[in-house]
Image 1 (cartoon, rainbow, N blue to C red):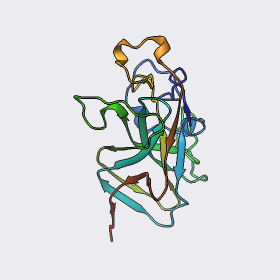
Image 2 (image 1 turned 45 degrees about the vertical axis):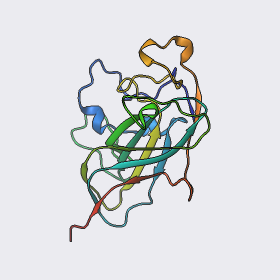
Image 3 (image 1 turned 60 degrees about the vertical axis):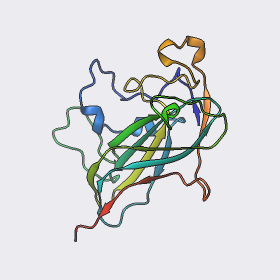
Image 4 (image 1 turned 90 degrees about the vertical axis):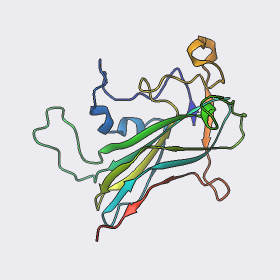
Length: 200
């Protein structure tokens, strides 16, 4: 996908003057419709699936730039026939609601050290592994499990110019489009690692 720091993926579909907490469980359909967000989802679950513990993102990525952010989001997708909540003052439609469960960012240049950042080599496949923090959640029968991957989440995360530079002193011309790839193959098996808990 093409990532443009001048058209970042927003953190919310609403225009808010303060961050608050609602965005942490907000419907992600606004993001899944964007061409710069990768979307993966399971088939409809035939039984409840409970996860507990750390969520680890293992990505094999490449980019035409020299730096990139990777945001991974874990989402619970509700069935299409889910009834709306009552009362429903904001007119939220729960059918196919994409509830954000977990989301975290990793800036590529810190993949080996936070003290000594390193540039990415353009078009070279690089492994990025990081923790989305612990979560305990039950995906109900009839729901789907979704993962979204993107490279901006503004303004939760500051924009990455996608060029290896000091972001705090970056000039307007430093912010450039880049083509990002998340590789999925036997050689480069990008995946999300979770612990499934059996309750019975």
